[in-house]
Length: 451
Image (cartoon, rainbow, N blue to C red; front, side, top):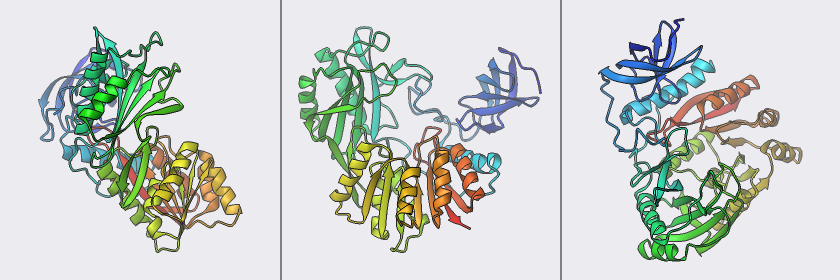
């Protein structure tokens, strides 16, 4: 392998993508990762960092551009860290994400599974129904936007292309009102000041919108701002204040106070209604969530007499969407507020064949089985870190006929699939789903059946 040094310059052809969407070039076998280049392009580049096994580079010139290269439509793209692959047209974005899933499952995991065509998004912009916007005071004025990559330096933004339009309008309006009212803004270094973040959430048709002010302490200075918001934006039906007075990067604190309207907004998903509060987990792309959940329920192949255990169930979304096709849904969740929300959502929808349990999925599932519950299908929808080893052990021990696994991280998906295939299961084809266009994230769904 070549010895490559910082500041050296090379010409090479981009051979592949990393899972983060960077291009990969190789100098005598030594891999160098370069942002914003496309597979097949010939580029001049400079090495900016050289480790023992790999390096990072910066493009000096694209000598031969790919047909799939576009100018990023967002003017903030090269400053903001929110999107990573806007130089790829949408066809190439889908190819990259499908390849990412394939590499994780079949190259790394050696599982030899079919990768289906990705379920793409239309349109691939203005989809986010939740915006978490940091606030800072800079050069005499309030700024709101998103962080530069690997920093807490905020880019002041007027229009984010992946947020819904109503979020952009509210973001700019609230920033102006904060400046008019001279609202106190949190200083991270000093741990002083009031407003840390503004969170905006909306339902699928923007008929209900929530604004949450995350504050360092309970002081409420928002009277004039709330009056202005509700006058200008009648679809804002919920304004809340979340208290986070800790020195932390975690956005939300424990306490939330309703300042205007309801503590929640209501959305409709696959014919079911869900009340979404400031801290609720709810998928951020409504159109793609419908496709993802339809695919998961299709893979479950329900006949109407099944008992389903819905693990990592959150506020009950995927399980409640399946209640019409199953005999019973049993949801398990480790966050108490989410369990209460799931029970509330079951009542809201007149669902009487769903129940929800608080605790770790591995503990509750084994307890239920010891009490005589025999699950036919288990839905698994874990966070990015994948399933806890104890949960996988419990799942193999309980041995449901079918497992439907929804993943937001291909590398932890392949790890968990390897465990389950070694413990009595056969995995079917994997379907990638593009929930987050313009970013390097990809979801996937797969069914496993007991051999």
